Length: 114
Image (cartoon, rainbow, N blue to C red):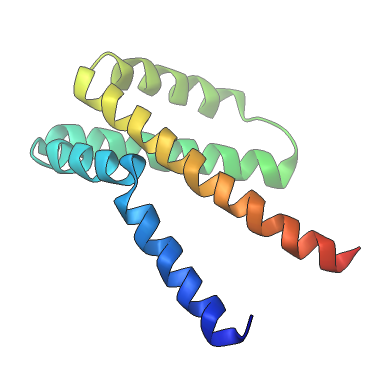
């Protein structure tokens, strides 16, 4: 397969991802969340703190217990809201799809590096 065909397939994959249930559900849920500015801000805050916590844990090799407790409390608040809960579930489903695609592509990379 030549390079142009590979690029064409990559664009085809991008179109397939955009047509997936995971993507369309996430886009719909995000639109609903964005209609409630307080909820959108709460989710943004949760995601930022959760991402920072995970990044710190990866860099230091240990979990910041104080930050972990804060994220757990925010998570409980977020999950108590049905719309936020559905949004996070759709975000998780989409992330899993992207991770699966990455793993498939990773197999190709690993086969060359062996």
